[in-house]
Structures are given as structure tokens and as C-alpha cells.
Figure: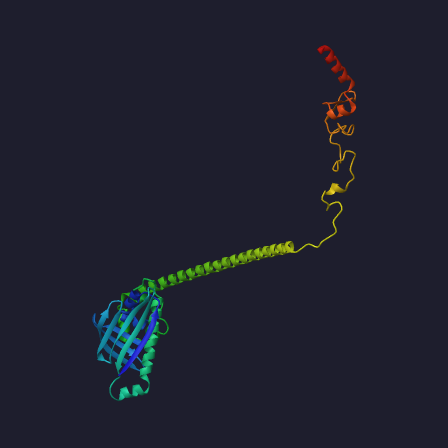
Length: 335
């Protein structure tokens, strides 16, 4: 008696994995040590496997739970039973575990088989074929529920490709409409088109990824340049602030520019006491110190006439002769 176990993770939804696994008669098309699976009826099947020799048995289905488990029990031939469980890991990943209990053939043949290590070889082949199943599913279209849609069928390690499938298996495939020449030609054309579409999709995806990487690199360079520029500005600002905070070196005061009066403070005074007089304010301002600041009008003939009488001039020089006569005339008329 021996127990065997194999496990694999399939990148596909659990319903798809479960449905594809239940197509037992397609196993020799992608498995290597299963040489035949033919249906006796809807509950029984005949199996032939090669492990250091051919082993065959008839099995009946037991304990099937949709999308969760399939089970079987041999009713003739190699005594064995087992189950296969399907566990949804994620919406797109499924864990598959195969548990199989085998009772080796009785008598001398069974002893020789055990001595040759057939048990360990059987478990290795079981794991290899479960891996083939995972690849078959993953190379099927996303909505495929028939193994004939998989690109992995008839790969070089499969029993059909190696020519080790039994005659009964070959006969069952000849009666399968999906195995007709027309169906196989259509299948090959579809697979080729799907492969071309997948290659184009991957190329477009690679192009988008490269473009995104280039844009990200450009943005990174621009950001680095902006940060460096800001760092230079901040450094310059700090240098200027540091220079302003440092005490200036004392120097001798300039007698002209550094005095309280400014530039004109050191200039000699003029006759009017102006320290900032540098040019004429209006024509004739130098004629009299008392009328120099009053506006004057120049009449025709060059005679300067004052626009108004200066009280300071009257107090010092007296009134002009004309004004004096006018005053006398006014007094005479009033008397």
C-alpha cells in the first residue's frame, strides 16, 4: 500500500480549472505517463498508465463536488482510489492537489516493482503530468472550457506526440469530431492567430512600458534640475544675508559726502546766505538782496519793473518818485 501526492498552482479561475480537468479522455494529449483514458459510460472510465511498465484499471466516479473536488475508485485492475481538490486562491489562481492511494500488485511482480523503486517513480510521473495540466490550462484562452482550445495540446512530451498512446485511445480520437482533419486545421489556424495577437499585445505593452519609463526618467531629471536651481538660489540668499549681518569696516568720513549737510554743506556761502544756490532761480534775482526773491517782469526796452512793491525796499530806500507824486496828488484832492 502506498499513498502519493502531487500539487500545483494554476493561473486560472477555479471553474475553468475544474472543468478542463474533468475531460479525462484528453489527458494523453498533454500528459506523458497516461496513455489512455476511454469512457465506458458517464460514470466509468478505463485508464492505462506507464510507469516502468503498463498498469491499467477501470474506475468509477465518486464524491464529485462542482468546482471543488472529483474522486474515483478502481473497480478492476490496479487497485487504487483517490481525489483531486480545487481551491480558489485568488479569482485568477487555483490550487490543485492530487491524493492517490495505490495497492501494488500482489505476488512476485509487486515485490520486484517495489524493489525497483516504482513507487517513487510513480509519484514523480504524477507530479510531472499535473504540471503538464497546469501549462495546458494556462495556454488556453481565458474563457476556454475544452482542452482542444489549448495551445499546449500535443506537445513533444505528450503520449500522443510520442506515439505511446494505446490503440483504443487512437480509435477514440478518430471518432472525436474535434480530431477531424478539418477541425484540427481550424484549430491550428486559430492558435496561430491567437499567438500573433498575443505577440502584438506584448509588443504594445512593452512599448507602453518603455514610454512610461522614459517619461518618468525625464520627469525625474526635470525635478532634480528644479531642486538644484532652488538650492542654488537658497545658497545665494544665505550668502547675501550673511554678508549683510557682518559688521562693515569703519572708514574715515568723507568731508563732502559724509557730513550732516550733505554734498553742499562744504561749499562756501554766497552773498545771499544760500548754501545750495547753484544757479539762477529767475532772471534778475541778483539786482537787489531785498527783491532778489520776488518775481520780476522785464518790460519792453529792457526796463525792469517790479510786479509788486517791496515793503523792505520802501523802508530802506523810500518810495519811488512817481509813487510819491501820486500820493501827494491824492492828498491834495482829498483836502
